[in-house]
Length: 406
Image (cartoon, rainbow, N blue to C red; front, side):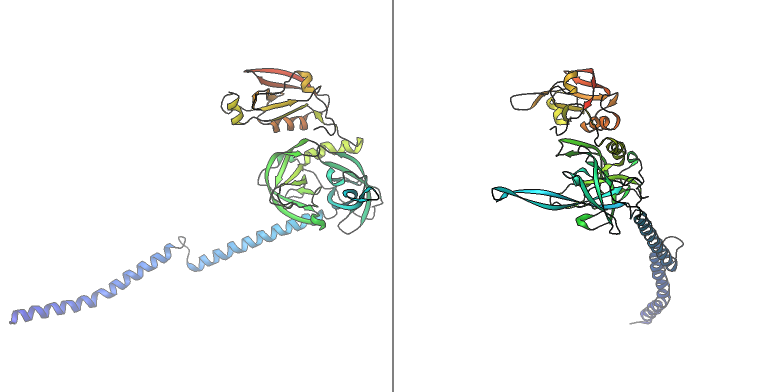
């Protein structure tokens, strides 16, 4: 190796040492900076980790405060209405035809439990008709355990509403009527409260929301449907029938009356009769003992796209299809026709109601609800009927709905 090669090798070694000395501090700074930037990018601009922790604590505190406030409001509503919700006990006689004693079926008495609420300062209690069906006297028990006799003064099987009158002296107890509110203003998603006596557990409160409005609830006992039903997911179980469904201010928006369930217990779908129905019916029940329902004398169904197609109607044609007309009823007298069926028992042609008093009818629900809410026995209505490709006007006078008509 000559002197020149030795010189070059030495120069390379020295240069390597200088680079090794110079680069690490610079690289350490760069990666350190990079790591710091990545950490900061996880935070909101201008918020350090200490500030972020404080913000999280503030949010948590605010949520806890709101929860406590909500619980306080619910507790206040419950306390205000504690003496407004009652338990109703009726004694019924049941006949067991499978047990024969001395040639006669065995008869035995059993208790039936339900709920109710105070209507006014005169001792009137509202409950479901099915809670007191078949009896004339019941026991009404307040939340403090005081019990009173009450008589049934009026029933409406079609709306499943009954009115009781306390017959004992209740002057030593402070019972408070529940304030009503306009059920037509109820919206899906509104918070609701149910108070009642599920399984005999007195004055139980549950909460939920309005799941849907304007439901049509079939009444198998009467053969007619109850319109404008409120659907809720607030827990309702056997024993809740007749209890109040309240808004978030403690005002009555409905009366709990039924559940949809395959097991006989609450499955997330409950139904309540709207307060507007109750306000309309109850004063008449107190005065007369019964409520006369206006009656069309028809049975029908909502026109579906499949039905429209079979009847060669325009796509999305809407209306209430008339299946059958009750003989000598208002519709029959006005000239409305039964549906015609082909050999396969499929509808071949039918009268279709498209409006009532100028209001569009898109579902059978619309027809039933309009008559129930706006009309009385003896009133006249104007129906527009689609028949054989034409729309005709038919005037009709409503009569009283017959009892136990199917």
